[in-house]
Length: 435
Image (cartoon, rainbow, N blue to C red; front, side, top):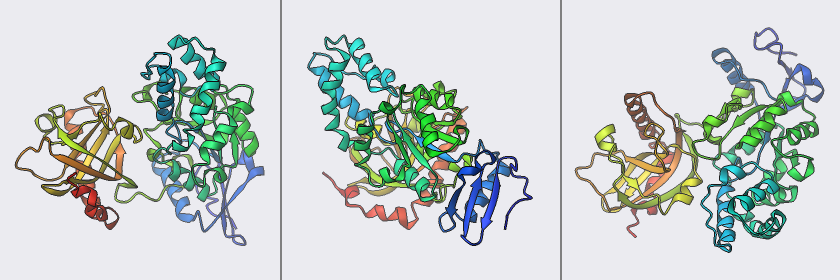
């Protein structure tokens, strides 16, 4: 029995079939019928199909894909912090100071290319091979400390749970890949294919690694979606004839990814249904629940624009002690609870990032406590618990449109924080801790 045969939904691209005997929903591409993927009805139901169909009418799909190929470092794992820590220690032996100026030259590159850039730019007396041999054990000792980037676990669980074929393709050696993902539960078994840079003749930006991944998945390259954080990775994906979503790992670099089919701020902002894949269903009242995290410190004076320019009094925190913590979290608008031990606990919405409208030079955190205070409280200890995500950081054509959006964020946060899943954090002892 076939469903939707008469629906004018890209009939040249898809055929939907329903098999009562197996109660399964399958999606087939005419150029890839031989590798039809049957998806259990209990996991992907007709509601998913309805979302895709509805979206195709209101907003055309970018392209229908059959699988997802993921990069590892900078896309799924927050590797940059570990790399900086190791290079800072190593270069110190040569009287050099790692300041991150070479990071753009090593992101997305093979280990050999990255090491060559460090040796040349810092004028080291060692050879590239010697540098790699010395750094290898230093990095190996740190793999267990690499955290998953926000949205990584969610994405892997979502795709594997819906039986979407996923592969991992990284310029890192296969052994290093296996070690890194071994510290993240459920990752290794979720990937049908894992390929390291030492398993192909040329790493990214050569398309070879992605073409090999598609070959092992038995899926045509044109039906693959690549998710990458680096320019070499995006270049490789497009050269392979694949669709590419860029998630730049370096700040203020989005404008460089012109060849990508889509550029998003973080994995939290990925919408699989744009590519004909099952949609996430965890957004609640325009908010995304996230694993809660904490930050705190004395309230400092900010840029002087909160009350004066925006009419929105923010309680700024110094980023000096928390630059590493903030680097783990994508820029964007979040919400949660704020505690002032001598005053109480209040609802809070905040921005993390560079505030494109004002073009900040450093990543900041600017909380807005949703309460009318009679006086300033500079110097008082402020504790924050962040529990949810609203949207990515964005630029605005005018100050008025920025202010309007901020008030919209406030309304969303205020209503969401009344939900039990968020309101339970109001009683966390951290918010009332005066130490």
